Length: 130
Image 1 (cartoon, rainbow, N blue to C red):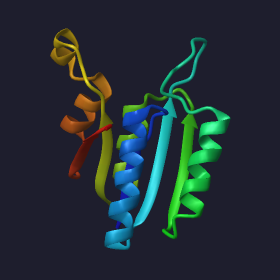
Image 2: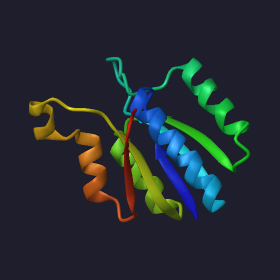
Image 3: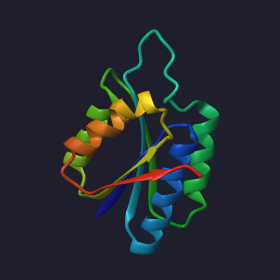
Image 4: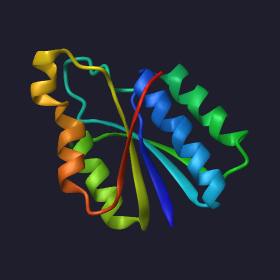
């Protein structure tokens, strides 16, 4: 089985990555870390830059677990990319990071997090940054 981490270059993304590595090590499962954006003309803050990709890949390579980092920018939303990976891989657990929200922000939860919680058929672990 495989653990899938939805990664964003923010503290909540790092929290999800840390928890994914911990659980993958404990369960002796494969870990796939994905960072996805539809791309386009405007800058997407959820897209990891080259330095962040290299940092995550280095963390994974020295972790001692079977781990892969994938980054997609091919016109699909992060939700679509993650749903496709859940469908095509044998995912035992999806890990996502949640950030603190204002009272108004709580009304919306976070569109990606909310959609993933409601749409994927596998268990989802939502973690918070410290």
